[in-house]
Length: 402
Ligand code: PMP
Image (cartoon, rainbow, N blue to C red; front, top):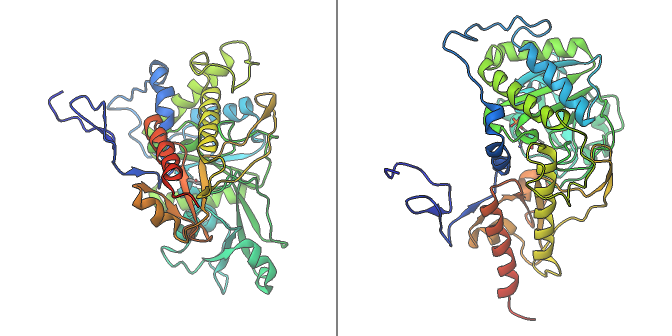
């Protein structure tokens, strides 16, 4: 190289192969770079070519949503059919610039400019840190963040209009969740992590409003594609209106790329006999084109590594999970969440404690929980994950015996 290549963090040298031992490991974001390895092996199936004159129009000549590429909708429906994680028959699909944009579109669609007070937005703590941040950043008169759904349910306010966000499996702690507010408000199911990489698929989800994202399913976070599956056509139309006002639709280039990537995932499962082997025992390289086998086997290995490193730890604890039957793999599998919800047993500020050890995490405070918790991403590249586990294990080894 001419020295112009930029190495990933923690790597240096002319060919970026040198590990920088005491570098800072940033695990604050859930950046799904773990999936690069799979797509590197499947690069040929995912080449997207868009010629200069193609896809120039604002419009996609879609049957349903004017900016949505027909073929993307077809592939999204097929993906859910193959995985069995959501009902799409008779449902409306709206594509967005990541599910982050669709979250905002649902808030817009489920509230009304006629209402005298902003609608309360709640979610059971610990909740995804973007829910409060995104809800309140424009100080809307339509909606406002009202905190932990469990507390909200105990108060009298839940007689008022509200929207409950249910993230399942949950970001940050991996729990399977259900709505907790006893009322007649709207419930939005954020199913970003309801994929066989992270959790047993226990049935086809069939809620009124469900959000999914390419970021956590195929790992293409940079493509910025998410989709909503909706029962009510009026909600679909109002969400589409939001996307029109907000960004005049969604990048067609991104939609084309997402279509190609989803097609490649589906082909991995439909071009050969169904795979009956265990996702955990199948060697990582024998399922070259089966994305969920790859994802589940990497996540299973990582959780095993992390649990071994923290086994008997007096410094840290992580949640335990029961395995359940997965209809996709047709056997019991473990929960292997995208994040580790780590608790420092002896330190009040876990984020600061880990920062001193050059591990950047997100404090529990951002999720409506205590500062003794942090969230750390399990979706980084292999080397970074291995460095994390080694460092956590060393915290253990270097502590003074009591
Ligand atoms: N919902 C949850 C629960 C998430 O964790 C994330 C990503 N961190 C999103 C939504 C947003 O995903 P996207 O990249 O599609 O905007």
